[in-house]
Length: 381
Image (cartoon, rainbow, N blue to C red; front, side, top):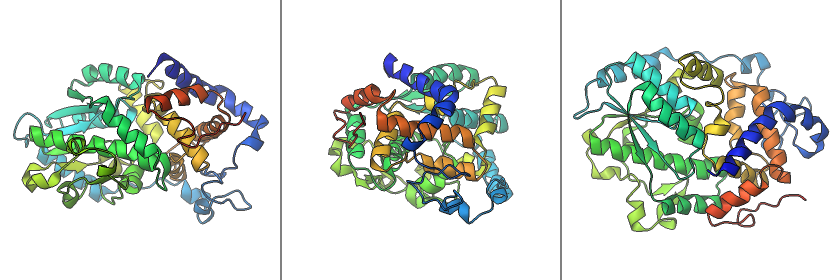
């Protein structure tokens, strides 16, 4: 990420927190109306006369914000798997944990380490060529603080340019979230699967939220089913891999049929069971002295393409496809309504006008060998 991009992202966050709450009153005619409970944009779901989206209209507000109880049966099931996994690896490790340098994966590693001290952990980061420098700084600091073994892999630059370039020009109905971000996540999981087989590690742990597991991966349980883990990857985000890559690059994705069930790691999503809200995770990693509020900001720790993805979505969908996740979290009382409303309102405004983001978006597109016309962006003068 260039210093210019870093400054843009930091300025964006500052503006959202300090200035946009006032600015928005002067440009309300330039932003969409939003559900008064969960902030869903009218471009995403229709609003009724009471200002409620179709999701919130059928449920009373007190029910919407009522915390979902922890599923004790699933929690015990998860704990049993982790207890039994301690010392079960054939070589040096029992669990491979995906580590982005953000708050969720940091929380996951610390909690697993504390609750299951005999679980031999290897942490893993995949550099997609657009990783946030804040996340990189976090990683360098946290690896030492958490006292964990760690490996860092960076595939060739052309691989990710091909993937992101193609996906940006072939968005599915879920926009950038369901195409670019999803394919990035699938390659991350496939890379973890390959490492686990190579190092004979029986478990992979990923810090995906309940929403990401249910709506992204389309799973109803905290463990990916074995039949999926034994299958070959032939497509990502609905796009055949052969449409994007040559045969050699396709081999970098997961080929589960090459292995017996005993060779393939189990893939678990503990946060699905723990079902925490954002503030609880932020508070805990701060209490542990691991991440400050600044260092745990998703705006600063997510990869640098996220602003570009938001702008593309606003121009093609009318809203950011990342909003669905956070609107659901707000409905369930697991995310701050005001914070995310200001973020997504300001994103919509900047996406339309180019304010703050125009030069950064053009710069990021150039790295992917694209122009604003290629992704249907037309900033208003």
